[in-house]
Length: 117
Length: 116
Image (cartoon, chains in turn cyan, brown):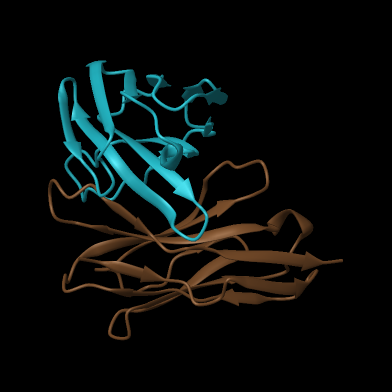
Protein backbone atom coordinates (compact mmCIF):
# COMPACT_ATOMS: atom_id res chain seq x y z
CA UNK A 1 0.00 0.00 0.00
CA UNK A 2 1.12 3.53 -0.78
CA UNK A 3 1.73 5.32 2.53
CA UNK A 4 -1.25 7.67 2.42
CA UNK A 5 -3.44 8.46 5.40
CA UNK A 6 -6.57 10.56 5.16
CA UNK A 7 -8.24 12.00 8.23
CA UNK A 8 -10.94 11.95 9.29
CA UNK A 9 -12.45 8.95 7.49
CA UNK A 10 -15.97 10.18 8.10
CA UNK A 11 -17.35 13.55 9.08
CA UNK A 12 -20.81 15.02 9.48
CA UNK A 13 -21.14 18.76 9.85
CA UNK A 14 -23.56 21.61 9.32
CA UNK A 15 -23.89 24.10 6.50
CA UNK A 16 -21.75 27.18 7.01
CA UNK A 17 -19.12 25.56 9.22
CA UNK A 18 -15.45 25.36 8.22
CA UNK A 19 -14.05 21.91 7.49
CA UNK A 20 -10.46 20.77 7.02
CA UNK A 21 -9.46 17.40 5.63
CA UNK A 22 -5.92 16.17 5.99
CA UNK A 23 -3.81 13.99 3.75
CA UNK A 24 -0.52 12.66 5.08
CA UNK A 25 2.03 10.70 3.05
CA UNK A 26 5.15 8.83 4.06
CA UNK A 27 6.48 8.34 0.50
CA UNK A 28 8.15 11.75 0.04
CA UNK A 29 6.38 12.13 -3.31
CA UNK A 30 6.38 15.52 -4.98
CA UNK A 31 2.80 15.63 -6.20
CA UNK A 32 -0.34 15.53 -4.08
CA UNK A 33 -3.98 15.85 -5.19
CA UNK A 34 -7.48 16.25 -3.86
CA UNK A 35 -10.43 14.74 -5.73
CA UNK A 36 -14.11 14.45 -5.02
CA UNK A 37 -16.24 11.51 -6.10
CA UNK A 38 -19.93 11.90 -6.79
CA UNK A 39 -22.41 9.51 -8.41
CA UNK A 40 -22.42 9.84 -12.19
CA UNK A 41 -19.24 11.95 -12.27
CA UNK A 42 -16.36 9.63 -11.49
CA UNK A 43 -13.54 11.46 -9.72
CA UNK A 44 -12.93 15.16 -10.35
CA UNK A 45 -9.80 17.10 -9.46
CA UNK A 46 -10.22 19.90 -6.90
CA UNK A 47 -6.65 21.12 -6.34
CA UNK A 48 -3.20 19.71 -6.55
CA UNK A 49 0.29 20.51 -5.29
CA UNK A 50 3.62 20.13 -7.06
CA UNK A 51 5.76 21.05 -4.06
CA UNK A 52 5.79 22.77 -0.71
CA UNK A 53 3.70 25.94 -0.99
CA UNK A 54 3.13 25.25 -4.72
CA UNK A 55 -0.50 24.54 -5.57
CA UNK A 56 -2.83 24.88 -8.52
CA UNK A 57 -6.54 24.63 -9.21
CA UNK A 58 -8.33 21.68 -10.71
CA UNK A 59 -11.67 21.56 -12.49
CA UNK A 60 -13.93 21.95 -9.42
CA UNK A 61 -11.97 24.29 -7.16
CA UNK A 62 -14.69 26.82 -6.26
CA UNK A 63 -15.40 26.80 -2.51
CA UNK A 64 -12.18 24.96 -1.66
CA UNK A 65 -8.71 26.03 -0.62
CA UNK A 66 -5.57 24.00 0.01
CA UNK A 67 -2.27 24.36 1.76
CA UNK A 68 0.98 22.44 1.78
CA UNK A 69 3.49 23.61 4.34
CA UNK A 70 5.39 20.31 4.46
CA UNK A 71 6.10 17.69 1.83
CA UNK A 72 4.10 15.09 3.71
CA UNK A 73 0.90 17.03 4.42
CA UNK A 74 -1.73 18.44 2.08
CA UNK A 75 -4.78 20.08 3.62
CA UNK A 76 -8.14 20.70 1.96
CA UNK A 77 -10.35 23.38 3.53
CA UNK A 78 -13.97 24.18 2.96
CA UNK A 79 -14.22 27.69 4.37
CA UNK A 80 -18.03 27.60 4.67
CA UNK A 81 -19.40 24.18 3.86
CA UNK A 82 -22.48 23.82 1.65
CA UNK A 83 -24.71 20.82 1.05
CA UNK A 84 -23.37 20.58 -2.52
CA UNK A 85 -19.99 19.70 -1.05
CA UNK A 86 -21.33 16.49 0.43
CA UNK A 87 -19.13 13.91 -1.25
CA UNK A 88 -16.37 11.38 -0.85
CA UNK A 89 -12.96 13.06 -0.96
CA UNK A 90 -9.83 11.28 -2.09
CA UNK A 91 -6.24 12.29 -1.70
CA UNK A 92 -3.67 10.98 -4.17
CA UNK A 93 0.09 11.17 -4.49
CA UNK A 94 2.46 10.76 -7.39
CA UNK A 95 6.19 10.40 -7.75
CA UNK A 96 8.10 11.94 -10.61
CA UNK A 97 9.69 9.76 -13.27
CA UNK A 98 13.21 10.89 -12.51
CA UNK A 99 15.17 11.26 -15.73
CA UNK A 100 12.81 9.01 -17.65
CA UNK A 101 9.23 9.56 -18.87
CA UNK A 102 7.00 11.22 -16.31
CA UNK A 103 4.65 8.27 -16.40
CA UNK A 104 4.22 7.49 -12.73
CA UNK A 105 0.60 6.81 -11.78
CA UNK A 106 -1.32 8.41 -8.97
CA UNK A 107 -1.92 6.34 -5.85
CA UNK A 108 -4.95 7.02 -3.73
CA UNK A 109 -5.82 7.16 -0.07
CA UNK A 110 -8.88 5.42 1.36
CA UNK A 111 -11.16 8.45 1.09
CA UNK A 112 -13.11 10.66 3.49
CA UNK A 113 -16.89 10.59 3.45
CA UNK A 114 -18.12 14.12 4.21
CA UNK A 115 -21.78 14.84 4.87
CA UNK A 116 -23.00 18.42 5.18
CA UNK A 117 -26.47 18.82 6.61
CA UNK B 1 -10.37 19.39 -23.11
CA UNK B 2 -9.98 15.69 -22.82
CA UNK B 3 -12.96 13.47 -22.10
CA UNK B 4 -13.19 9.82 -21.13
CA UNK B 5 -16.29 7.75 -21.87
CA UNK B 6 -17.26 4.42 -20.38
CA UNK B 7 -20.43 3.40 -22.15
CA UNK B 8 -21.20 0.33 -20.03
CA UNK B 9 -22.56 1.39 -16.62
CA UNK B 10 -22.85 -2.27 -15.56
CA UNK B 11 -21.41 -5.57 -16.71
CA UNK B 12 -21.61 -9.10 -15.36
CA UNK B 13 -19.57 -12.20 -16.03
CA UNK B 14 -19.58 -15.79 -14.91
CA UNK B 15 -16.75 -16.76 -12.59
CA UNK B 16 -13.71 -18.07 -14.53
CA UNK B 17 -14.92 -16.47 -17.77
CA UNK B 18 -13.44 -13.50 -19.61
CA UNK B 19 -14.93 -10.03 -19.72
CA UNK B 20 -13.98 -6.85 -21.58
CA UNK B 21 -14.72 -3.36 -20.31
CA UNK B 22 -14.82 -0.54 -22.85
CA UNK B 23 -13.28 2.91 -22.66
CA UNK B 24 -12.96 5.59 -25.29
CA UNK B 25 -11.38 8.99 -24.95
CA UNK B 26 -11.13 12.20 -26.87
CA UNK B 27 -7.90 14.16 -27.14
CA UNK B 28 -5.89 16.18 -29.62
CA UNK B 29 -2.62 15.21 -27.99
CA UNK B 30 -0.27 12.61 -29.41
CA UNK B 31 1.37 11.55 -26.18
CA UNK B 32 -0.44 10.69 -22.98
CA UNK B 33 -1.00 7.99 -20.37
CA UNK B 34 -4.01 5.79 -19.78
CA UNK B 35 -4.96 3.92 -16.63
CA UNK B 36 -7.52 1.51 -15.29
CA UNK B 37 -8.41 1.77 -11.62
CA UNK B 38 -10.52 -0.63 -9.59
CA UNK B 39 -12.74 0.48 -6.71
CA UNK B 40 -14.13 -2.41 -4.63
CA UNK B 41 -16.85 -1.88 -2.01
CA UNK B 42 -14.12 -0.94 0.46
CA UNK B 43 -13.88 2.34 -1.52
CA UNK B 44 -10.14 2.10 -2.16
CA UNK B 45 -8.93 3.19 -5.60
CA UNK B 46 -6.48 0.56 -6.79
CA UNK B 47 -4.34 0.88 -9.90
CA UNK B 48 -4.93 -2.11 -12.17
CA UNK B 49 -2.89 -1.34 -15.26
CA UNK B 50 -1.37 1.54 -17.21
CA UNK B 51 -0.43 2.22 -20.81
CA UNK B 52 1.84 4.81 -22.37
CA UNK B 53 0.51 6.10 -25.69
CA UNK B 54 3.95 5.97 -27.30
CA UNK B 55 4.14 2.23 -26.71
CA UNK B 56 2.51 0.05 -29.34
CA UNK B 57 2.60 -3.06 -27.19
CA UNK B 58 -0.48 -3.61 -25.08
CA UNK B 59 0.14 -3.66 -21.34
CA UNK B 60 -0.54 -6.81 -19.32
CA UNK B 61 -0.62 -7.51 -15.59
CA UNK B 62 -1.31 -11.14 -14.79
CA UNK B 63 -5.02 -11.73 -15.65
CA UNK B 64 -5.52 -8.13 -16.76
CA UNK B 65 -4.65 -6.86 -20.21
CA UNK B 66 -5.59 -3.93 -22.38
CA UNK B 67 -6.43 -3.49 -26.03
CA UNK B 68 -5.04 -0.06 -26.88
CA UNK B 69 -6.15 1.27 -30.25
CA UNK B 70 -4.58 4.71 -30.56
CA UNK B 71 -6.16 5.69 -33.87
CA UNK B 72 -9.60 4.72 -32.61
CA UNK B 73 -8.91 6.31 -29.20
CA UNK B 74 -10.00 3.15 -27.50
CA UNK B 75 -8.58 1.54 -24.35
CA UNK B 76 -10.47 -1.57 -23.28
CA UNK B 77 -9.66 -3.76 -20.28
CA UNK B 78 -9.83 -7.54 -20.53
CA UNK B 79 -10.10 -9.60 -17.37
CA UNK B 80 -9.38 -13.29 -17.87
CA UNK B 81 -10.39 -16.10 -15.52
CA UNK B 82 -12.69 -13.76 -13.58
CA UNK B 83 -12.65 -14.18 -9.82
CA UNK B 84 -15.11 -13.13 -7.14
CA UNK B 85 -12.57 -10.60 -5.90
CA UNK B 86 -12.73 -8.82 -9.24
CA UNK B 87 -16.19 -7.48 -8.42
CA UNK B 88 -15.84 -3.70 -8.27
CA UNK B 89 -16.30 -0.41 -10.07
CA UNK B 90 -13.70 0.03 -12.78
CA UNK B 91 -12.61 3.48 -13.89
CA UNK B 92 -10.69 4.40 -16.99
CA UNK B 93 -8.51 7.51 -16.70
CA UNK B 94 -6.42 9.75 -18.95
CA UNK B 95 -3.46 11.99 -18.19
CA UNK B 96 -1.62 14.27 -20.55
CA UNK B 97 2.15 13.89 -20.85
CA UNK B 98 2.55 17.67 -21.09
CA UNK B 99 4.66 19.00 -18.25
CA UNK B 100 2.54 20.75 -15.66
CA UNK B 101 -0.71 19.13 -16.77
CA UNK B 102 -1.46 17.06 -13.71
CA UNK B 103 -5.15 16.50 -14.24
CA UNK B 104 -6.28 12.88 -14.28
CA UNK B 105 -9.57 12.71 -16.19
CA UNK B 106 -11.82 9.83 -15.21
CA UNK B 107 -14.70 8.12 -16.91
CA UNK B 108 -17.91 7.52 -14.98
CA UNK B 109 -17.10 3.89 -14.28
CA UNK B 110 -18.38 0.40 -15.01
CA UNK B 111 -19.75 -1.75 -12.22
CA UNK B 112 -18.61 -5.35 -12.69
CA UNK B 113 -20.51 -8.18 -11.06
CA UNK B 114 -19.07 -11.69 -10.87
CA UNK B 115 -21.64 -14.49 -10.98
CA UNK B 116 -20.56 -17.58 -8.99
